[in-house]
Amino acid sequence: MDGPDLPGGGPFGDLMRDLARLLTAQGPINWEVARQLALWTASGGQSEANPEPLARIRTEELLRVAEMHVAEATGLATSRRGWLGARSVTKAEWASAVLASLKEVLTQLASSLGTGPGTAEVGQDDAMGQLLGNLPQVIGPLLIGAQAGTMVGHLASRAMGQYDMPLPPPPDDQLLAVPSVVDAFSAEWALPPDDVRMYVGLRDVTHHAVLIRPHVADFVKRHLSAYAAAFQMPADLLEERLSGLDPTDPMSFQRSLGDPETLLGEMQSDDQRRLMAPFRAFLAALTGYADYFVESVGQRLVGSYALVSEAFRRRRLEDGPGQKVLGKLLGIEVGQGVVDKGHSFIAGVVERAGEAALGRLWASTATMPTPAEVDAPGLWLARTEFVD
Image 1: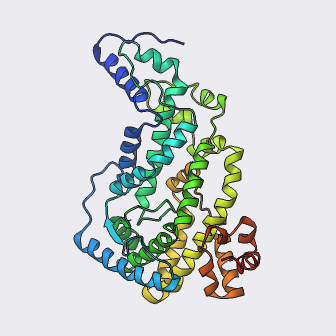
Image 2: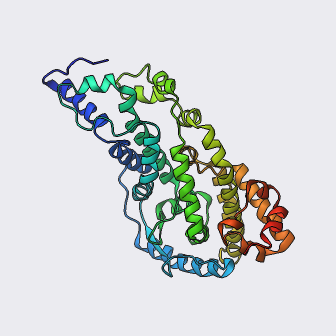
């Protein structure tokens, strides 16, 4: 249905032309909306001070110690180039870096939802007509951009380091650290800041050591690509959600789309549910493995380890909206069930065959556990005993 031409001038005409351009000029995902919402949500709309030099120096020093001990305990290379670096950033900078790292998979996800390039060039006289006449098509880039930006921003508002969520590793072996969040968490729980920095460093180095292994990196990349490609937007879902949309009322977007976690659940396809089974097994093994070595090494290096680990355990149970919804969007969901399975799997392996058996876990794609093996570690030990 063609809409009426916009008036030739006046503030209302200018406003609606700007809205039309915003919705129709960005391709499959509106990156400007994503970026703005990510930065604003991460910082709460407030300006942030640069990381304090002392906090930056201590983060770098403790990361080097963590790297040395994790390499010794796990036997894994902790970096691609021979050493890790720490990049201390603000919450907004963390959000910007992570959003950029997800550009490829989010673009594929948006394309799979049928948002497509759309009408990249819209004349001023017919802009509103195209906007209203193709609303389900042009709203897609804004929807994905808004959801991705907001969720990355929420995650950034509480992220302490690189791997608050097991996302793909940075290509340059520079691990992000957010000293302001570490300091706030330390103060909230009355913990020594250096103990929290060391705990985060151990966690991030262990995750990085696993995720940079070529076959693991390829496994994660293939999952993200396949999961994004399998998203489906039911033909009547978006139309139903947008039936009450008023383009002149920005708040009507939020009211129409409703809870993002519910919306993503409605969009999840059967193919995605099948893809999640082997990936949840991987996430369980990764989480259990990382937690095992953080505890093993942390008890020696973190003076208040018992208090710090309990604080992080409770924090993980809280899982902010960013982690939950971004996890659904990307297919990287680490709920308590996944954590518990991972801990049981690793404990079962160590109990039956000793810590040395964990060295097989990331040796190759063939030695990574299946969903059935995560539930029964004895099966994994029996199968991998003869795998080269």
